[in-house]
Length: 308
Image (cartoon, rainbow, N blue to C red; front, side, top):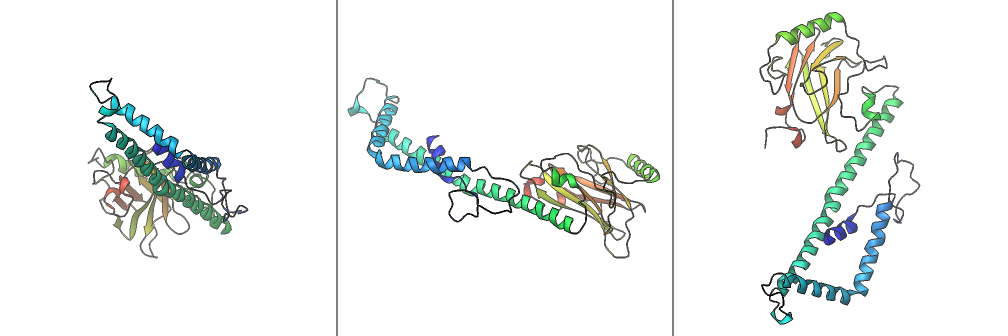
């Protein structure tokens, strides 16, 4: 524990705004949240204090380790009254103390230097990506498809598509289309109870010049995966219609989600999920599409289930 604590203190990553860094741009205005560097300052102080005390009190530290090794070795003897000459476990005890300090320090030093720093960097890049996306969309005079995804990074509920040009998250769907979709949903039998939509919507992601696709990214803040599911035309002549129904796993709040197509002629649904599932889609002209995300290569490894 002592070695691990020292390893962590010596390896805490430094942010670019850390006040004791001479090369830091402390007046940078590109930061949209403030880093708390208190623990970095404490780490900086303690590491210098530890190194200084170790050099000054090195002989005292050796005496402490010597006494600790003797006390530990006595616990391994059958005769507790045995004195120093018969401490046959002294070398072993001393080696255990040194080994555990080195192992604990090395392991805990490497984790902040490699994994912890990478996690912080990935989070910073994700926030910068969101900030850039907001800036670009505002500059173009466009609204985001799902403003909740920008405003609430930790939202884990399903996020529905936005109706283009209305500023509302509620899509405009006719009662006739809803009735058709619900009838189809009720009449098509469930073939896999563990994956509700599997083999229910034709089994093909491409049909009648339409394409059902999805992109997946890890969300280190929530542990979930961010999905962007999209129905796109494969040709410029193809019109997928204005009303599209997506069919999801039964662990989502709703199994049927309606979305309007956007100005580019695509239907987009953004949501969060904890693992892969089969998604279906139904268009106004009766075209049905199906995509098993568990069989699509290239997604984050943890997103798949039942695969090594």
